[in-house]
Image (cartoon, rainbow, N blue to C red; front, side, top):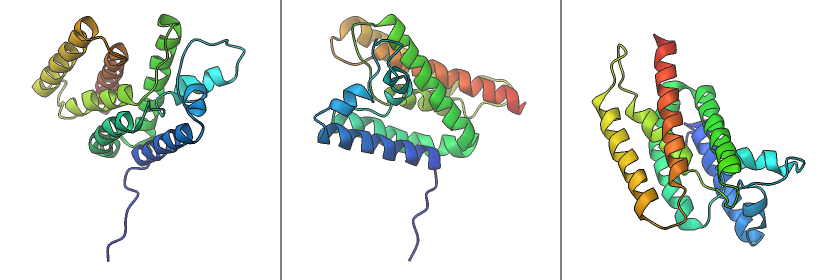
Length: 187
């Protein structure tokens, strides 16, 4: 009988923490989702403000929001963790969470942000760069970026929903930056 392997510690831990956040949200009637796992404008004197700048990526509005993000995270994340290493991927996730949290806090004071979509789009753009060699930009990255950005811009302009499309773009920009910086370091 084969044993299970915790093959992608950062991605699997992110998944389990997100699952715990979802369960806590259900158990507390969304108190924890709002107070720990959503970022919004709040006083800088409130300690949870700083927790939310990172913790918002673990929170989800419900099971379908969670499943949509986690399916992509579990498919795209492990190969990226294998390629870039756990410490680097954890740093990329933390930096993406912080950047999107700060932008939400500063630019959108009347709304809240939660969910792993920015992290997922960071991973997608990072994956599209994984074939980069000799400083050449992969056509797959260009096509993914065009389709992805086009879809997000269309949604921003024409779709009225509660999706933070701007933060998806921020996540994609973080993944692209991370990919180019990693390629430069390897060179």
